[in-house]
Length: 312
Image (cartoon, rainbow, N blue to C red; front, side, top):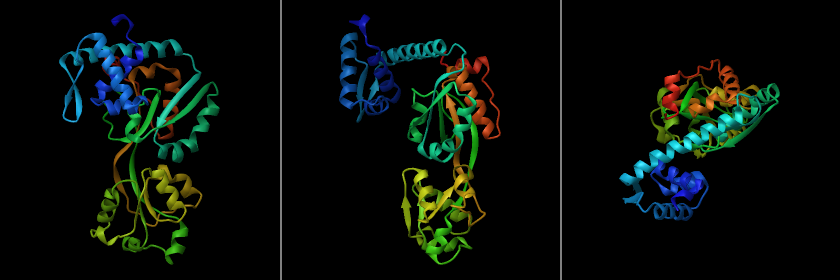
């Protein structure tokens, strides 16, 4: 039985061990919770040991499970690295998958990616949309672009830009309000568009001397910033957004900046990948292009850094 352990089952175990959660493993692998549980039970039966134990409402690895998880993780990593090396063989061409959240895909990548595609016709680009929090775990992607702090263990990453955000709205909103906005208190009668719980608007208003956030009573909350930007462009309200994500709307006159004041967002835009994927010519070409668009250059890790990132 042990000689015939299915690779898919080992991959399921690796995801469950990494997340310490059957539900999160199921979400990552696009399986049902019951399918994950069934595969893990069969694996434990085949090995004759318990790999997980109950821990509160979740699960935790047993001592044997931790030993097995290290071994399986290393083996799957080596398989993936070898497969990428054989598939690429330092040749330019083939598929390149880029994972990113919808806001970046629609507001920046969609406006710029065609330039890369026309310059490199042998590379077939695929955009894989993912929630920002899941981009770093998108194992099927060659590269990920996401908003965050820059701390992703065992990943290579590079900062694209630190993000400053400021209010933006459509000229249509001036007509709806019957006036232009000359001071932050003018926003009390219009809708503030949010992609978070209101924290960023509180910070911006406080920086402008407006500390009574409760006096701003009209709010609309969106799960993705791209929706908030589109709503602002239609005259629905005012959004806090960076120049990078609003450039096309501002350039076309669909959005304008009523105030000069901005604040630093709690993070920046980064590109990341598993260290071994930097060996692929397609990935390196895209990284050179992407970083160049943000005025930066690609710096590859040293041999020691690459070894650490590859988990060797």
